[in-house]
Length: 506
Image 1: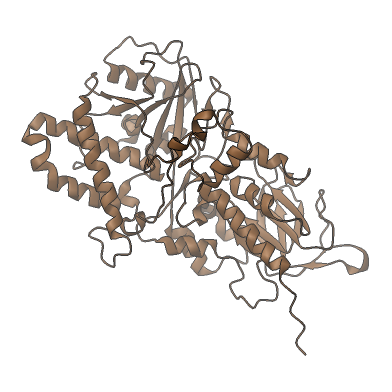
Image 2: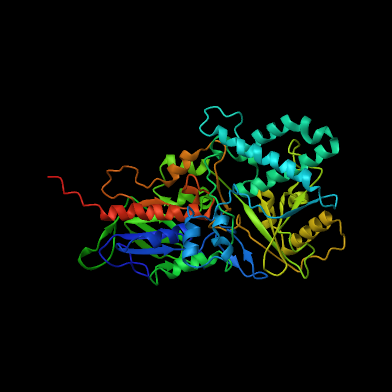
């Protein structure tokens, strides 16, 4: 028998617990139609999960930054519009029709490590080649024998093939284009949330779907969406600072109470000793957390097929570094400052000395409009994880070095403050988002999303349901994938609750 948790769940209807109050958990709660009782347990002191706005020069999105593909097919865009959270630009129909292919077309300037702005034409040619190669990966979707296991190997082999004809055969121009291509691969690492494109599977890469629309941001911060979803729920639904230690399923857990109490198949045990008994638990924790903790988090452990999917899929780190300046050194129309190390090439191994060269993985800076004088840098992979271990002063010093090198101005004033995300160190996240790794496929995403127990005839169905960005086969790594996955699992339960109860077998 178990003492019910402080925030007891009452009533005779089905009891649902959701673990994690990110967009998947909040989305599930929003769609569960008043059957029985619901609790959302969140380990952090806030809702939103990997959506997290922090005040910094009034513009610090620590996690999700853009609505990718803000058009009617995007549920995050629809909700944000409905709640009145977007600016007038996002609502313009022509902006909703733009095909960005997942890459924001910001007006940019590209700095080279020689301290000069690089020739825009040469940069454009290299980038066009890169995006053409990336688009050509779609041809291998469903292929039994792709030419290479990974996107990175394929792209590099194709670059090697085109090198002789590149830049009209001029050596200097060719070196520059190779350096720009190396920078393009780093940007792609940020977009895919991986250390290297050599880890991203080639065959499944084309399954990811980019929605149309000119990527836009939330004027009041991305967290305004999570806050609105929270405010729509009955008070007391979400419990913060409520980390779950273990989910016991396939059990018979009797609640104390009059007349012997009800028996539940699932018992959710929190780090603080609170216990919640439930008929159904929607697990929305990040894949990074599952990779590290699934063996002890579920008792009994997950079936081997699901454990294998958790191991197979990729989950990496993409962090942001915000720098605030007294005065901008960039021009008012510039929205993206790109960084190219001119001695690099995708055909040569990068320098493996993380400590000395981690900052070379940085792809550049987005200028945050209209937030004072703030640049937001992006950096992925092991270098990004190394950055998390450094002090603010060390990060600020490295960023000042990068900017002085790129602008060719040794006296460029250092930023006055720095703020950065640390997604890999976050104990309940352990990274940024998922990708389909070499050796995995979209089928692994579907296996991860499958509810348990697996036997559809089990008399106690849907004890464990799974949501979150890593469970959406075509929109993994996005907030809209997370939200849709939460809706999907809520709908699964709604259908169960409406189904006629089978008559007992005579």
